[in-house]
Image (cartoon, rainbow, N blue to C red; front, side, top):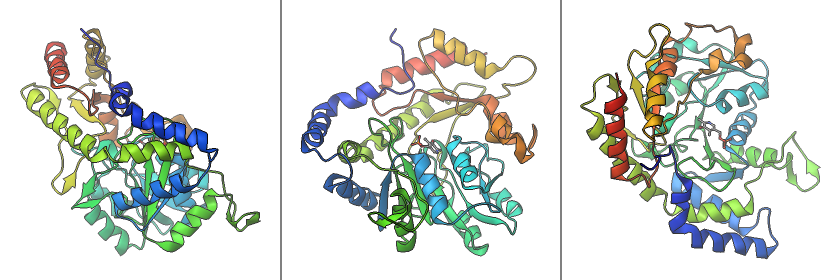
Amino acid sequence: MNTIPPVDLVRQHRPISEAIETAVLEVLRSGRYIGGQTVDDFEKQFSQFVGTKYCIGCNSGTDALLLALRALNIGPGDEVITTPFTFIATAETITLTGAKPVFIDIDRNTFNFDLNLLEAAITPRTKAIIPVHLFGQPVNMSRLMQIAHHHDLYVIEDCAQATGAMWDGEKVGNIGHIGCFSFFPTKNLGTCGDGGVVTTNDPAIADVVRTIKEHGSRQRYYHDLVGINSRLDTIHAAILQIKLSYLDEWNQRRREIAQHYHNLLEPILGIQLPQEIPGGYHVWNQYTILIEDSFNGAENKRDHLKQKLQEHSIISMIYYPIPLHLQKVYQNLGYQIGSFPITEKAAHEVLSLPMFPDLTFEEQQQVAYGLKDCIV
Ligand SMILES: *Cc1c(COP(=O)(O)O)cnc(C)c1O
């Protein structure tokens, strides 16, 4: 039996290889490797895709978050509320500004932070909220924006796993004050390396983001702010232009695959399947199931299952095994085991199954048989 990988970038590249290789060669031969028309064009195309007035390319999703926070002047003494169940970059960038990440627990049905807990976490020091559209599932942005407006807080959307996702017909990245996207290869829109963008409808924010990412400079050799060097390289912009034209189709495929998984796995007892929440358009960067009651005693059922699936040539992944509030780097924040019980339970029970647009129905059947066989 062939191994079923969690994601297969070779399969994604194969049908578009000629177009990508031509575009990359063109950049190589042009001698123009930083900026230029190709980057400007991609920024324009991506802002049209999301629906925002502005889009600023940068080096990564992590830089996009850092630039967003810096543009809002967030720093020492400020608090930013986010989820403990996310990739480290979401909180790390808050810490890098000197501000303090404040976590709230998640909702087990969406893996996103629980909006019922949001208002209680707001203090006079709170400056912003970072919703993470985890695994491609949008946060309930209507409710979030209502709370944010009421408390006069900024909202920075972490859209790294959710390019193309929508809430109430509106693309993520076009609902909060700022959107941050990653083009890491395994994201829904990924380049052949690192890349990211910041989106916004606010001209002042767009200006400051662009200035900070260019060494704080609006005019070459005149520096107004303390900046960094963060660029979306021309080669990546050329690759992304091509891939962007396939994104809707790829996301549609992910949705079909999620539906197939749902039909195949529904009869299996002991697992909870992910669901798209009403009002949301989920783009399934991950298809993440919960192996119920995994952690009772010494044995973790989920870990055992993952191992057995591997023996069946099915590679599954754990996103995320250790919530951020329990990471060594965040010991100083004062959280402990038990601070966020839903998150901690999810960390013991989550299992992400193979998910990528080129996954075949036969492979999905193999995953379903494997799961049925291995679950105890
Ligand atoms: C991938 C990711 C990031 C960081 O993006 P990079 O491009 O890898 O820097 C940030 N937040 C989340 C939720 C992510 O999944």
